[in-house]
Length: 248
Image (cartoon, rainbow, N blue to C red; front, side):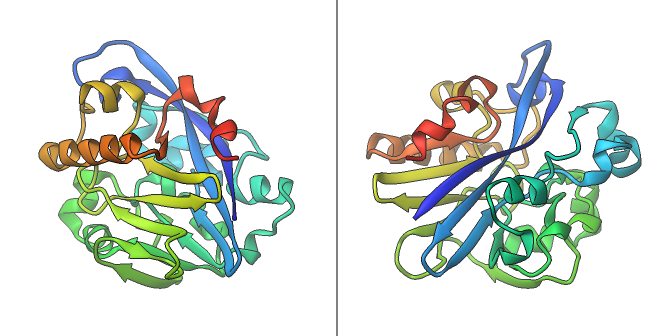
């Protein structure tokens, strides 16, 4: 088992979106993760769509007025995988934490994979009111993948090594991922926990679908951490440089 952290561009936006009530701006990484499991290659999230490298407004609409995209050619998920020696078409399973643009934008490049997503997230991504509320773009995820919808915790291979964890709150059906390396558990929180301050102070983002569900999720992360798991937080720029050392 090996776990690789990939940076697929950066986003700069209002700090208050990440920490309610805060002012100023913050520049955050857009992560993806590759898991080498004996029974296949698994990708967790895919970053942004390549179109945002040249024309963010055309792809993102009004979101491009809120976030500045820093995303150069060669940083898209297929190129990041190629730099590690893996062709995108070799990915067997793609897990989306949720359906926002910076987590599903590269799904089209992972065309041969089975897509695993929480049922309630997938359903939200097909409801007009939720598409508007969550700024989902079906062009990112309605691509003809073989889709496996899961309900709650899901052990991908049945061996406890790659487990989807329901971590609702950020969106209706957000999920995180627990990866059991030989050195111990790593939890990829994705947007269920943006920053270290989110976790330590229970300081929620300015935009959240279900605040109480997110608080419960953050308390669960604390329990996992206290039990020895290493947490890789969704968009923490201060911790991102140290992430590779946590994956060994």
